[in-house]
Amino acid sequence: MSIKLERLEHILAEEIAKVISEEIKDEDINLVTVTAVDISSDLSYAKVYFTNLIDKDREKVTKALNKASNFIRNKLFDRVEIRKMPELTFIYDESIAYGNKIEKIINKLNEEEK
Image (tube, rainbow, N blue to C red):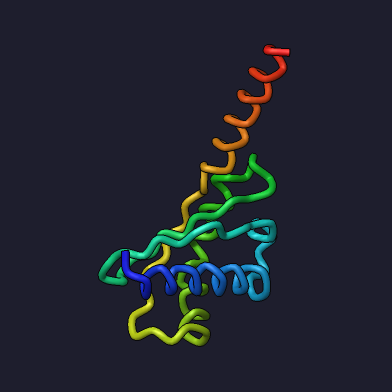
């Protein structure tokens, strides 16, 4: 992956997080944290990975974010200098929950050794 693409992914992640926190009024999207952005090599598509503090509402929040993706994309045109803004697809980031599960298993194994 090129350095320019990595930099663009980082910039988009920051700006998407700002748009979500400052400009979207939807109550379902309040507690969202953008964890990463993965942009295709031709800059046509971007997968935006996020987490939510309320894990039960995962599907509801994903639908709300994907519904608001055009609004977010339009706001990004004003904030990021890029010729072609990629289409945004929001995906719930499972890695944090998976990491927590692994940590619990390791802690349990450490307690059993004592």
